[in-house]
Length: 508
Image (cartoon, rainbow, N blue to C red; front, side, top):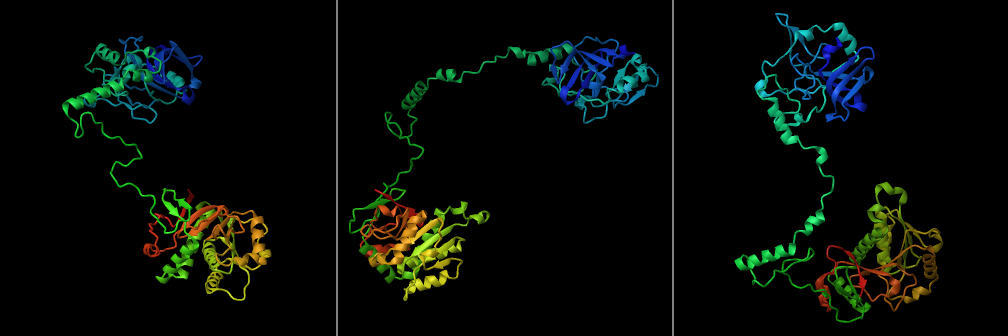
């Protein structure tokens, strides 16, 4: 009975490791439990060997795709699209009334088998007849040999004719389709008949083909045609339009004036911003006059102290790491700032800066020596600072022995040079120089009055003073002086700050 199934077209699934094979049954060995396929296809690709043999243990699913009729040729290599089945594999089998044959209806669609998609015109009354000789197949033989072959499953591709653009790869072709096999095969060969081995494996030479294009000659031809036809909208034929770079503005504008600040007294020291604007320095007498006129118009000392404290604290927070250092996830890396202040207005500016830093969760240690009488501005700032978590000390011995993150220097004063001879001043300078922490000086004195601590950064107010080399990198902060106040003292002023309140200055 094994010979009755020879010539059938089947699909065999051997699992994920071996894949899916399909072909025509050429031999079935009952004793060794093997089945052989001739002209096999592996996962839709034709195998190089003419025949493959499978053991029953390697087969997980089997699908009978076509059972040949007595008139069909067993050597035909064209796999039909009609999806058939046998008992136990998911097809319904019944007998005709005359008992001469069985009608096999289209099997139920399964997730493991390819679904047959018939043509819209052939959806009705589609059935295939099996010969009486195939009906006499022994059920015991089928049960014994097909239990090891289990369930049915389709395959992805069988022949290059499946990929024809005129039909779906899994479309069911009726017995009488109205098309001759020769015509269909001719169309398939015409569309998919090229051998894959004939495809050249060399890379396309882009550079060689690009060299064949003479770009200069083509553009010259276009330019000549535009001159002759007069298609150019403006300009003479011999005039080329202006070409701009990607960083140039095509809109016409006035030339940029980089010297917008003009002072009546030349100090022979100028700075420039990142944008190239020139910022001249001013003498201490002119600087003091600007502050005096501003205070007369309402910019009081308290307002200046608050503005200076905000700008200095913003710069200090940036030097401490900004958002990378000061965020809720870095509570274990709370920065420490040592604030060295003297008993003058510069010291009051430093205390205001320390209050803002403490409000931003910075550990601030304020050093201020004890005096019998303090300035009112210092008393007011100390009263506000005491409401924060900052620490105030009056002796250098109470300052940290280990290096801090930043030292803010407000010890020096423009007028009172005798403070440098005080023991507390010398002790504070020695501590700052030995702590090895970077130093930020707020409103340092001029070059004629060098400070005792070398600063890495210096913050000037309004307009810079002619600072020396020990002042380090100079920054300028806006303390809110109106433009007409500068004009009143003879300074032609235009703000260089732009969108910022603190900007860096570069020596020219």
